[in-house]
Amino acid sequence: MTALNRVPSLMVRAGTASAFAIAAVGGSVVVPGVASDAAAATPATKALQVAASKKGAPYRYGATGPKRFDCSGLTLYSFKKAGKKLPRTAAQQYNKTRHISVGSRKAGDLVFFHSGSSVYHVGIYAGKGKIWHAPRTGDVVRLQKIWTKSVWYGRVR
Image (tube, rainbow, N blue to C red):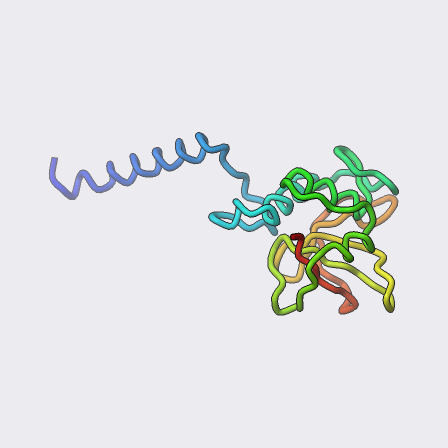
């Protein structure tokens, strides 16, 4: 076998080895709006993956999962699965995060919607101006574009 004939074989074996390595460490699922690679190891990115995995779960006021959620219930549940503790309501969660600027936001940060000084909604930033959230009664957990500039960002410590 010539060196040229071995190259495809080596590439196939490397791909197979990579697939086995991914499977051995638990693998990952590619989900729109979810960071991958080395970032997947961070609690924020893990929380983002958990929220994305709940796509289609029905909204229920006061629900904290695992099958139904309200907005802060989804963020609480997602970060709990990632090993971080958050308080129950969106306003309490805002008060427990490190406040960051729009320019500093990263996938996995929390996005707080406010009217004046009152926080009324929260989601998990997915990048590209989108969040995973549980919007309202009659809706489901979904990825959605941020619809207002009246938002603050917070990073879970």
